[in-house]
Length: 109
Length: 109
Length: 109
Image (cartoon, rainbow over all chains, first blue to last red):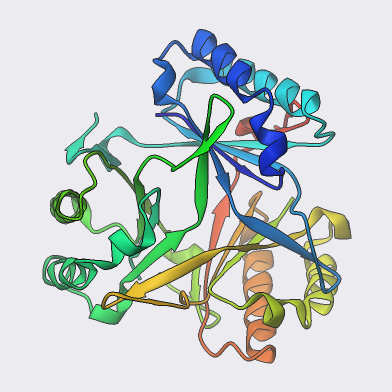
């Protein structure tokens, strides 16, 4: 289940083009469409004592799929961000370990 | 301090049975009751351009306690989820490193 | 980009003294001021079925800078917390991997 966890991008902005984002990811990652979760996490930044929008950041939490797929996924997400008007974006991939991951009580790997 | 970080389960739903959840975890993990933090993190999912509830997901962030305890904790949490009406739930365990963890300025390990 | 992700501290409380916090971190970490992101993530705790403030917790997500710098950063953050009236605080450092981190599509390391 690749989780695409977004902070610092407005929710309405994120909705536009999100369908196409998942379409592209399905092709590259090769797993069912409903495995993907595009998730928006509520946060704000504090800069010099003022509350502002957080810097756009996407964490992809998934099982490792190798560097080639990872690079492609980063490219797809970056292009998606640019398309919806996000100029600067950082992405970090974080890998789940199968033995530490459970779906309805059953661990993977 | 085991942190049980919940996304995608309604807050009111989560409250019901939460006392019993911690009761069970205390027995299996063998640490004081107030070490546990059941935390709800605000998030939503975006599916085909629509804002929906996120998929139920629980991340347990803690110091590694071995596979036997981990399996038991996963089982307790999964049964808790079913009891409060959550049909499908994924759980991931993420381990803190003692030397990178500080309580009031003092690192562990 | 060191991310200082805060949960369980009231937003208004966090704003006070936040400028000085970043001033101090810039000196110790030695990277530009705008690399730092002080971010507040919305969450609540559930204790015995009641919704309460979460336990104050700060996760620093960054590229590893060694134990000496890490200890100093933990000390600065802990003193900041005490100054704004937070008595107890846990901090965990989580390290990004350069090859899994992308800035505008280009990976680090």
